[in-house]
Image 1 (cartoon, one colour):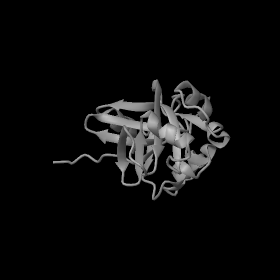
Image 2 (image 1 turned 60 degrees about the vertical axis):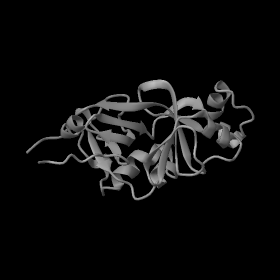
Image 3 (image 1 turned 180 degrees about the horizontal axis):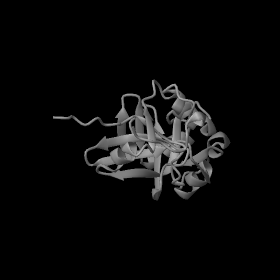
Image 4 (image 1 turned 90 degrees about the vertical axis):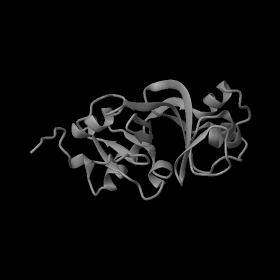
Length: 188
C-alpha cells in the first residue's frame, strides 16, 4: 500500500508555463496538506496595501512608520478579506496554527497589535487571502508539471530574501535556474 507524501512546510514553486494570474511566478508555502486537500500562503505577490492601512482598518492606532510602510502580500485568491500573519515562534497568540517547529500562522488581531507596539514576532509576513486546493487537486497539478516543490532549510527565503527574488531563490534550493526551464513540459 502506498503512503501519501504530504507537503506541509514545503514551497510550491510555479513552473514557467503556469499562467494562472494568481500563481504565475509564484512561491506558495504549504501550511496544511492532507488527503482532504491543501492550504497555502503565497509569499511573493505584493498587494497595493501597506500594513499601516490594514492596521487602521482593524482599529490598531499608532503604528510605527517602519511597520506601517511594509507591503502586505496577497496570500492567495481565497477569502481576500481574511488576514494571515506568518511568523517564527514567539509569544502565543489567540488564534495560531503551527506549520512546523519554526513556523506559525496567526489569524487573530492580537499579533498585529503586538507588532505595532514592538512586542510581536521579529520576522513575519502579513497576507490577505490564501490558496486552497480540494482533495487530489494539488497532486494533479503536480502531475501536470505546474509546480516544483522544495523544503527550505531555514526561513530566510520567507523573511530575508527580497519579495522579487523569492521565485528564483526557491528554485535554487533544488539547484535549478528557473529562467532556463522551458515553458512547456513533456512526459516520457
